[in-house]
Amino acid sequence: MPTLTAPVHTSTNPGAVRTARDDLARALRRDLPSLLPVERGISAERGAATAEYAVATMAAVGFAGLLVVILRGDEVRTILTDLVRNALTVSV
Image 1: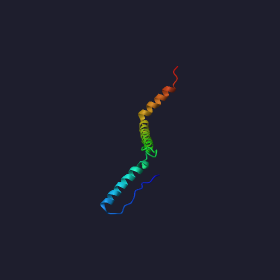
Image 2: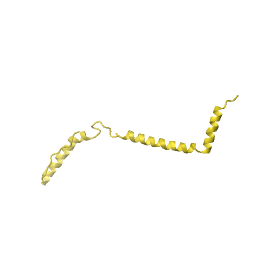
Image 3: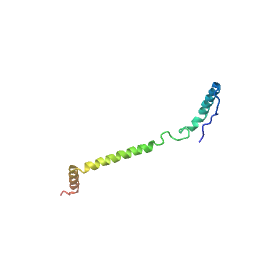
Image 4: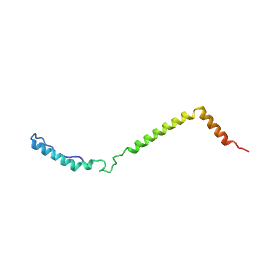
């Protein structure tokens, strides 16, 4: 991985500070594009798919919990039992 390199200036002379700032700006323009994730071929949304799977899994767990609560009710149990009995009854 490339590293950002810029000359180090230790002078307190305003002209030297300006030169150091200009040197840093040049180093950033030169090296920064190779440091960015997109430039290295890594998507900026690298963890998005994992996060989407986590959200979908949590939604599915919530929905399953809701179904368990609904299906444990006496009315639903009676409806399902009658439905199965009617389906298995052979009419002659």
